[in-house]
Image (tube, rainbow, N blue to C red; front, side):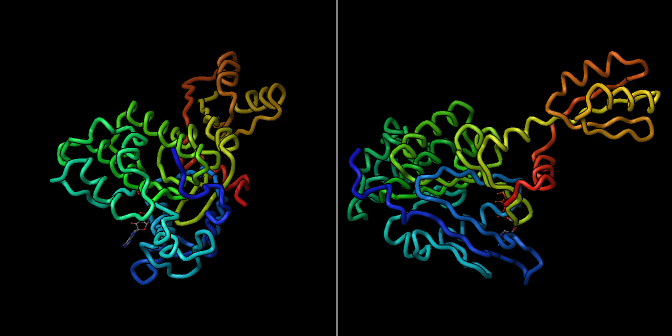
Length: 309
Ligand SMILES: Nc1ncnc2c1ncn2[C@@H]1O[C@H](COP(=O)(O)OP(=O)(O)OP(=O)(O)O)[C@@H](O)[C@H]1O
């Protein structure tokens, strides 16, 4: 691929400061005071449950929504100016395609609007949909249409790609091949910021994960730290003799954090198999259960343990 512009230029960083977006006269605090700096070339996943504020944040990064307060700068520029210069482009959840046209026609039409376009057909190849060039958009599946949007987003040769749940509607293999294409783009030095609910997607692709919950950033760190927290399991069991089990666990597993109330033992551990084996070897331990915490519970752990900056 020939790049029309050096992709390693440091001006592609995102700077977000004290950013808020409130709706309904402040009743809905969709984004509630976030600070975030993304350096050029980083691959960052914005992870969080429904309603966490991911889309609203990305909308402000893209200049689609005006902040209630605070600032977003893209390479030192206001988002709209950065978009005008082709520095940033997006694959969004919403936004229609022209359904009566063929994929190749849409790409060629949009490509003709750029002064220094990456060739439209090359964008189709990079998005893995060269074979769909002659198919009408209306006949493409949801996942294929997402790829058309991805191809369109490559046309200005942006330094930064913003993707809002780009693999929504794709099956597992389409999802995997989508991320392989995206990885090639990242290797070119592009900054990639994507929102997802899927922990696995963040784990396999992002170097850095920003966890959002209720309009705030609750944790921000490398994937390895997040992975540790998602390995935590909740172990519970009914115990006949609270004192005997408490003494035994304190002696044999001194680092284990657990509670026993009303005959119910609850513990959080990354060594759940080991703990389960141990508990089942004791007298009067029944109904043992091991469960993985939900993403929300993992968030709470992360916040409580002060991983957030
Ligand atoms: N235009 C709007 N008017 C009122 N409330 C809104 C508006 N846009 C978003 N919200 C609310 O703001 C909150 C954050 O929404 P947002 O779409 O940013 O979350 P999200 O993390 O992207 O969620 P999802 O993963 O479901 O897409 C939600 O409670 C949502 O209902």
